[in-house]
Length: 68
Image (cartoon, rainbow, N blue to C red):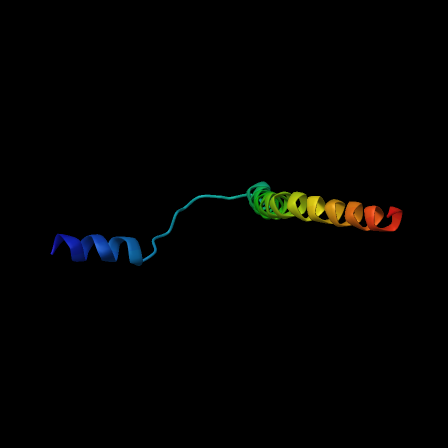
């Protein structure tokens, strides 16, 4: 019975009687954009350096073949 009461307490919303101004919304949007940009920057950083190394190695092998 206690589990049922706890379940309905968290499922059924209640009024907060609080004012959340426009600054909270702007802050949430800025934080969300920051997290998304950080994720893309991390993915880019993880993928870019091996690709860059591969392209440099490929360029060097082409130059060596031209010299021979």
